[in-house]
Amino acid sequence: MTTETPRTPIPLVEGFRYETDGAIATLTIDRPQKLGALSREMWFALPDILHAIDAAPEVDVLILRGTDGHFSAGSDINDLNVPLADFWAMNSAAEDALASCDIPTIAAIEGVCVGGGTELAAACDIRIAAPGSRFGITAAKLGLVYPPGPTRRFAAAIGESWARYLLLTGNLIDTARADGLGFLHEVTDDPVGAAHRTAQRISARSAFTQTGLLRILRGEDPDPAGWLDEVYPVELGEGQRAFFAKETPDFGFHRVDWRD
Image 1: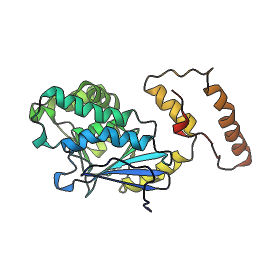
Image 2 (image 1 turned 180 degrees about the vertical axis):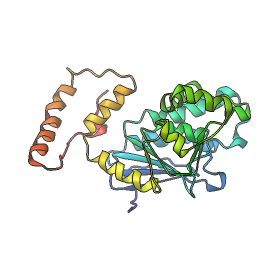
Image 3 (image 1 turned 90 degrees about the vertical axis):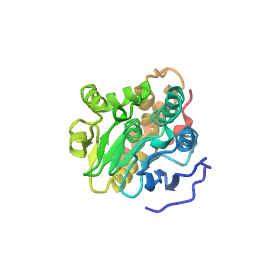
């Protein structure tokens, strides 16, 4: 991977690293001394960081990863002594920002992916993990209640039956179990490399299609008779041309062109 200086300023705080490789961006949770646990400052900063990346015209795909063999242990336990409403607002804003990105997102997971780490992974569109990773939400061991949005998103990603089991027991599951439950899309010894290969495939596809489908999956109902109908024949025409010419299509639509 060749890293580059990002063109769009990203409002990072200590504990995050950001780099780009062509149209693929990587946001790294860089807090190895805490197994990737996010500080309150990091949680509060995450919405602005993600909004900036999502608005960057040079970026097609975002990879979220950790360091030193771990994804994230969630929230730093030392930072949890706040009113529950404050914790819910902080946690929900960060994870909702990730889940609502127009840019496709990929979690590249190794080692510990627990608590808020599991919820961050659940908020990504695609999850790729290494064997030996561990997943679960241990709130019941701490007397902590997670906010509604992220909790329901986790249940939707892993299945409600197993979400109830993991939330009630605080138990962790391994990569094989998470894969069998459909939480993971790929298991590989090199999840970061696999994430980059998947990101490259996504980057070559139609952003018009991808943005539309992601917004529909989030509950929006775009008007097919509006501006979408103007873009549709152009994008489809390029797709058809490339198909018959056996070439890679050169789609002209970008995520930032989507009109609300």
